[in-house]
Length: 402
Image (cartoon, rainbow, N blue to C red; front, side):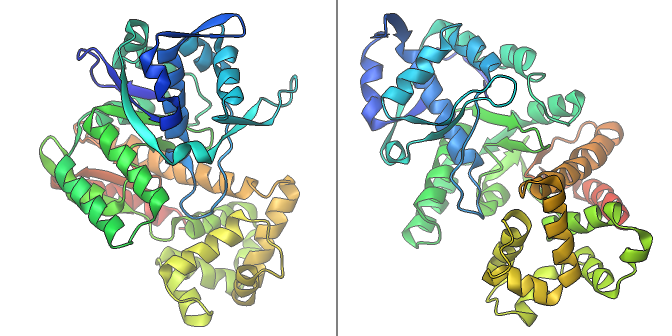
């Protein structure tokens, strides 16, 4: 969902594929006997493009598939929302992956990536959409319409703080364009950062809480260098505190919860715990496997944690050679849950509990004036609060494996 900080300017800005630009020239379009608002179609297209770019995995090149909430669709596009969805399917923007089954499954969609190559920025001025995109309306309507495990008072805090973040538009775009020119980033990452910078600059703050405890926003998809050098809160430059090798670390936390005390004394597991606790697991892979750098080591870890664990696959064989007992735990955990994705979900729950229920909850009580935003396993904040945030963060980090 998208919050607009202000709709007093009388229009909303959207990104749409070039092939749908004709919608800006008409107010309504007749489809299967029903008149559809062009502004609603534009808004829906923009929402799903953002969902695609801001949720697609950085590390694993999986095609994003998603479900659409009928409650939110009904609020935004009235009781005929299915006509808007079907129009986009018939016009090759959306692809239906799997259909609805009563009591078991909602419809699943993916985007036609050919529509995402050439995009245009357009404006709409529909009065109903303007009202529905005001911060006040959306906070009242949407904060409770999700399955996030994050307590609602914490959700309200982190959403409110998003609107105090400013971006240096010129410098951030200069940096981004230079990164593209030097081929430091590819087309997809460039486009994602470009959309994010443009949206933040036009005060179009996007966020969504997923059911596994993560908060996705315009800011989580920005390159770290942009967050560090070109964002500010109340005129103050920002700092960022994060967990090194967070997913391997939370795997250790999960093992600590699941395994018996006897099994935890296994020297291999003790060695693994020591490496992740000190943020050195990726260096271990680089030193002892045919791994070139930290990025590849991280890719290896993600493939093992979040993939299907075929024993003949290169990275699985490497990991097994160093940590056979840990590898067995990973496979057994996925097999017991009968879903290879369940491990990633469990690790995200643990990450969310650490960031929101421990660190942010503590800061809300002790220092409510500190404005913050999260980037999954890290917290960004005005640099003047560095000592306070760091002390709280490190306190709870020490307790993860103690």
